[in-house]
Image 1: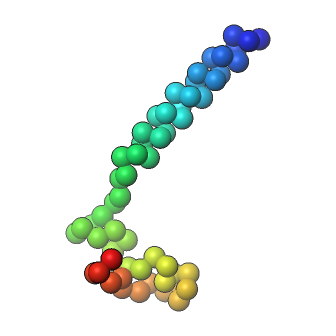
Image 2: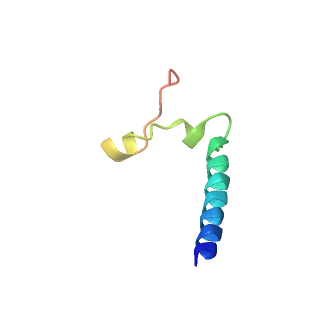
Length: 57
């Protein structure tokens, strides 16, 4: 029983390390250098529609 638990823990650690590596790369999809088309993501929740973002940010 202990041996099975060790293998499961090892598999979990390998899977966790692999997923953390994928997150660390920081891939952001952009088109023409702008993520989400240059719109303000908060406006979808506050104004209910897409609003053009500020180039200052």
